[in-house]
Image (tube, rainbow, N blue to C red):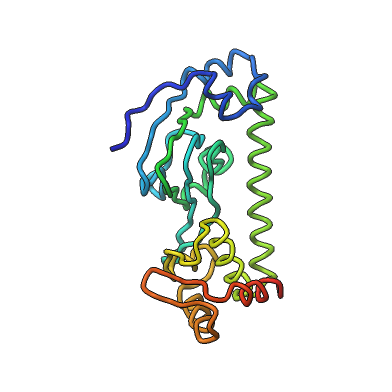
Amino acid sequence: MDEPSQSIPESAWISHFPELGTVAEPEWSSLVQHTRTQSLSRGTVLFSPGFPCRNVILLLSGTVRIVMHGETGREILLHRVTAADLIIITIPELFSELSDLAEGIAESDVRVGLVPFQPFADAIGACPAFRHFVFSRIASRLGSVMSLLDRIAFLRLDVRLAELLLRAVDQTGNRTLRTTHHDLAVELWSSRESVSRLLKDFERNGWVRLDRGRVEIVAMDELSRIARIG
């Protein structure tokens, strides 16, 4: 069960975000006093269309997946947020329209810092170090999204699929990946049908072995060759 919210001491802020160690303005102290932490179970929806987040969220531990749902029902992965990061889409003054279309889902058990909007805005206005922290996180996230859009625009889907499978093996250390065609399609900004066709091509070539909810990588070298084509 999810834990009730608790306050977070300033020392804990600094341990997660060392760059905030120089912030000394009273608005920063107010933000710290108003922030609460909460532990949430894997699968918890932090916000979704029609149910916006009521706080700016700092991710202290775990991973959160940010997805968008199109009018046709298709789902695409915008990005993942990992520990010690700011979920920038929850900043209402900057991303209110986008947050109305997006969903944030805990991909693992997570611990979050919940910052009310007004103390957050006051700290941005009064604290240069905190403002730099926030804007640098926004710039980094936008850069990642631009890089992703570049790859989607200029790399073939088979290349991106091969890269994704290789990256998953590298991250898990396991050649048998527990995933679905739908999950892969969400990651690749593609349709499940297109990804399924490519996976079946890979299987016919002897590069992967498919089973329900699993993709076993058989020929790493061939997938690496496909990835290098891009």
